[in-house]
Amino acid sequence: MQFRQSNGSARSLPSGAEIGIDGQTILVPIAEGIHLSCDAGGVELIQDVTDEFLEAIGPYMASMQAYVAVENKSTNFRFKLIFRASATGRTWNAAQDVFAYVTANGETTQAPYNTTLNFGRKMQWGLACSTTTGVAAEGATVWVYLAIRLRAS
Image (tube, rainbow, N blue to C red; front, side, top):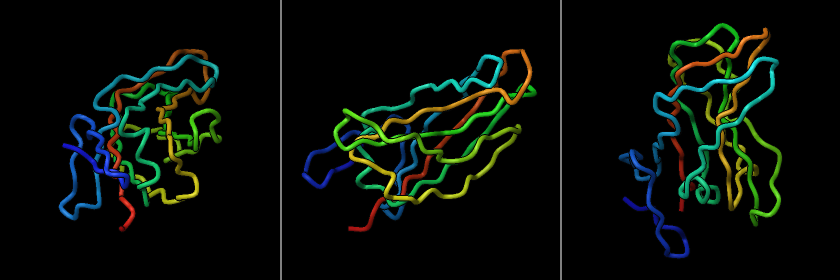
């Protein structure tokens, strides 16, 4: 399956991605049942989840909404999805949170993120995790699916 850019070139959708029946929404799996872990001390660790599609989708995005599931979370574990943008890939803007830290087991639908001024020609994506307190390493199994709403033509 491919996504056609305005210049006529095509980019392949990531494995498992789906296009909505309206043709304007793409559901992209970011993490499917992966175990995230972080060290003690509240230091944020970031796992890169950027692929060719996610790197180039910024100029076409109107908004995004995350669907999240967490299982087997240890006591002080928390995580969130972040991104940062660039026009050239040489310098990057500050990281933006797609959603605030998730701190509980269960499934949630996050609020839509639609600050289009933060989207860029190139984008990097990551899962950020840290501990809230304590001296032990923490972790959880997480799923993140991102519904990306495309700009109207």
